[in-house]
Length: 368
Ligand SMILES: *Cc1c(COP(=O)(O)O)cnc(C)c1O
Image (cartoon, rainbow, N blue to C red; front, side, top):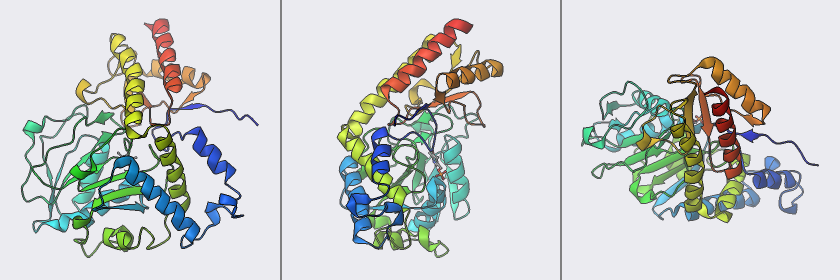
């Protein structure tokens, strides 16, 4: 039976590839002809361990993860990692301090959480709006910091790093929740990468943590055991019940990414998709207004205002109503910034993006 599907631009949980949903549907009652669902499977069974190991090996292959890195599948979301990162790493050096780059909501939250466990140094002059990445020349890194932390893509503000920060050898930690596998990344430059799955690689419930082995084992004693990297790594993410179904879905998404050319092919497509929207914004003479500096505009999340600089709220409501009539949903900007936000994660197709582009052009013509 053909079921009606909308075009989903949600920032997360976000659109999944159709083939992944169909596969999960097909296997819902009986996984691999076992006669039961992944949802009903013991996490200690060899069948589940196969799913877990397959998911990990796909991830290792897609990101070319070096052998001296551990991969974990944890609960608690990206926000859980805001605590887990300092709990596990801030004790790497005696001073228990960490350097943070704060370029949007998510890194601000991470820095605030880290303050509970040690000293936090914001390495650049405080920004009065989250629309750019401060010039690396203005950063003051603390040589005795245990690690340097940044958020690779600020999902709310649409600010994305197009470079890997240089840290003079200090351990680099990155929250890649909203651009994970949207482009190639050299894992060997990082001490730790984490990403909640529900933006670009699956559904809510599981967070991937990739960490260099030598950084494990310096955990503060107050760290909850489920967030302790040493315990989780030693137990292959099976210290306690992991988010089994979410790990299974991530495995299907990774397979889909592999079958579609891997992270390099995702990057090509994501460049193409985001250019469609930014080109329309740029050509609109300010009717569509994206406040983010051109050097760090996100390919994943595009925030913009409609009608004039700062936005015309009545027109923005019309824009959203018209989009919804055309089957396009979840374009409303985050409540803290307002306006519109189009999230163009891997699963959002070129056709989906072209449909939005066509609608934007039509709306511009009608109202400018
Ligand atoms: C969504 C998001 C988070 C928070 O994820 P939760 O799973 O809701 O805790 C953290 N960082 C970034 C960049 C995000 O996009």
